Image (cartoon, rainbow, N blue to C red; front, top):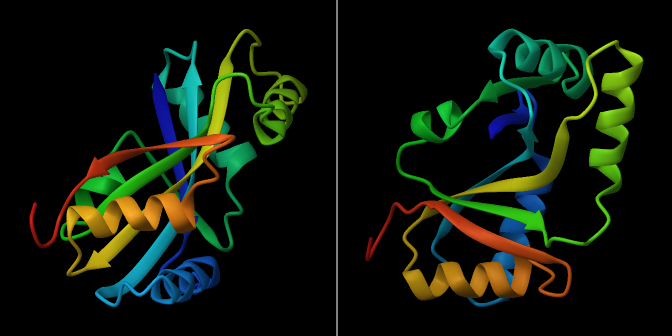
Length: 158
């Protein structure tokens, strides 16, 4: 499986992340200093790094406002953040992934590729494991249609 992560450039404010940070504060968890967000695309059936780079550069990214990373390269550079991925559960319609597949076909990129989309949240602050669970269950995830996975845990009570 190949991953492409798309996030705002450093010069573009993460308004969605700021909104999530406010929602977290409303739960009573006050240790969050910063929340950054990105879109995550998982591709199955792509073996070429060049093909993945082409998809990211031509289809997924708004080059003016966004950057992209492949694999976990962005996670690795975000030392000190707890990282959570949220994806749709199996069987739930993922309209964005359907659109990506259509755009790939229109761009002449081979079909037969499976795509799933999600969001990645970078949480910076002094938070416990229980805080992370609460944030996921009350703010980040709709448990009926989504599931979450902890990608990296940094902070208090690691």
